[in-house]
Length: 360
Image (cartoon, rainbow, N blue to C red; front, side, top):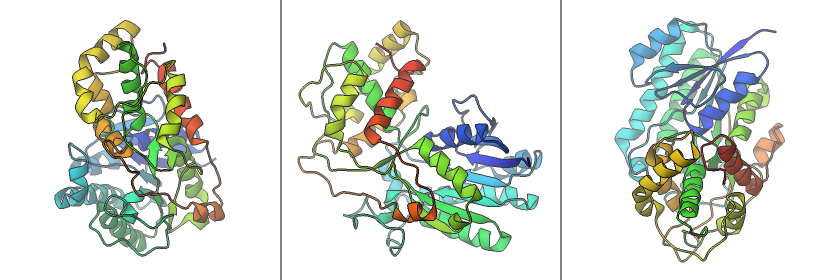
């Protein structure tokens, strides 16, 4: 069997980590991860590179076998997360990162396919109530975004060099990665573990929420593998989710059960404000349970800020829904799905088994 070589850019993030693991065990694939930080995986190989250093990227990739496929998950955010979504300089930075990688790969003349990540912000969900469900055939939402800068760059390079591409728009992504800025599971798990250590029940910290959709990073990785061999994926934009919807308040009892906690009355708070002061409690948990986990904020990154948004912290009315249609992807031939409530419980237990969260 001919071996193809995939480069996963942003391999230390939630999506990149899952992609590197999936390609790392797929027959006929050689998986190479690229990121500044080493990913917490045992599969594939890793290049510690900064995509804002084009000379280093070109030299490193020139020294290895040609790359045939790219899964591009790299992303630079600003501290505090939300301000960066409107920062024009950061938008250009994210464009330069993709350009740097494509420039480094161009001399190899071996690239066949690129998977590029976008998200629900493509529909303006962070700016205004979006049309529900979001559909890929809608006109481009008229707001500035690195999504559009990267997409235009990718289309131009693909047309010139003759490789294929697929663009993906997931909603909330669930998985594991250390220090990721948008990892709800790390924020939820540490909030629950610290509450339990303090002898408190698991209390809902957010406001009123609406039905929403999510996607498991492992399901996304399956989709990347599918797109690498599916002619019907070439040049297409696909929404992708688990295929169901859930409501945070309804899931909360299952989170409590997974963490072996009683369910308490709601205690509205912003975790980005209340949790950093709990770092010492977390350090004690790490030592007592001999966890394979770093300091609290190193593990969680800006994810408390992210879940404050997801939980509508301080909101007494549900926010506008931002659900996505996945009909186009299903009709194209990818029909994998997952129960979102079961997924959340499964990931929390996975983190317990791997000593990232306390198991009792």
